[in-house]
Length: 259
Image 1 (spheres, rainbow, N blue to C red):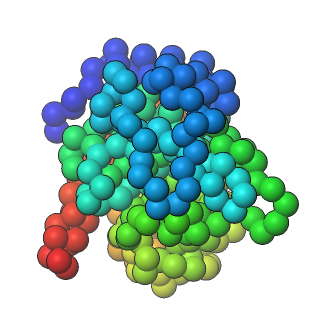
Image 2: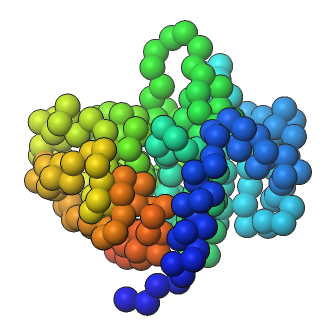
Image 3: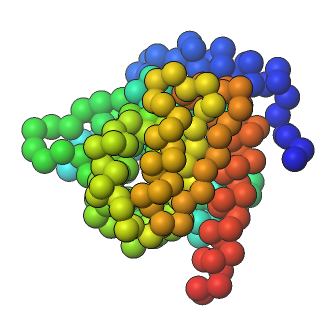
């Protein structure tokens, strides 16, 4: 399969990711795009702000969710298949800009939405009250039947949505998520197109847990990314992107057939 990124690009991505400090980088990214975050807080259903200078395909905005400010990046047509990109504990929404994922999804016609989870990046921590429910935010953003991409730590936000409301999703892409063995039994019997992705050299979450997810969720397939560690989408972005686009293309065909 032809790759669209050079090994030099992968090295640059890894170097950039190593320098990421979640809050600092998200704030710097917003300022570099000419966005004053205090003026970009949008109530649910309002018109999105203007595209960021220098990146006309990218929009940064904030929404109020249960009294908390959530920061997100959006790219691609609003009528495209929604792809919600979560992040691991060391990263934030801007990681998906660094890897080229947001732009790639947008150019292929998908509506990509990268979130800063509560307490990460430019999003506030949740106030006292019920725990953060990803499904509530997805509904607030009016994302109909999205695909959830959940690396590492973000599995703890994605798994409850899959378990409780799989029928509201078009697909699920867990990337070496945490907590697999805590939810395996709850996932059994769920039918949902799922692409389980793991780095072959992951030393944080054992790769055999990929097989546990595939056995638990009906409609799953597995992608093991060679020469990649836990954050395989940073180590091998071209292979990750190839696998993700192939999976999304299959979902898009089914979506078109249902219209």
